[in-house]
Length: 96
Image (cartoon, rainbow, N blue to C red; front, side):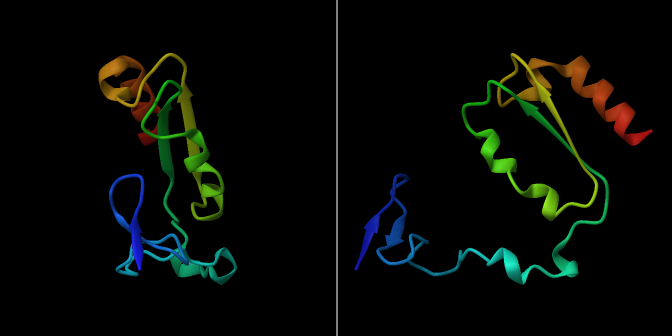
């Protein structure tokens, strides 16, 4: 029997995953090199983002070889709208 999760998505009582089983957590010990992103990656994060918690980034460096994270104080989830000039500068610097 399944129950509805916080977003009204059916959840399995045993695993906490969607009842379909399509979304299963992978064991981090089974990570292979084919799963690691090998290209430089920039994440621009608004520190006032209420949609995504910064803990979402925890451990990401294990999967991305060249991860750069820029946190913008006073900026919400909508970083491009809240700080367009700063985002443009970060992108220009990253792509140079």
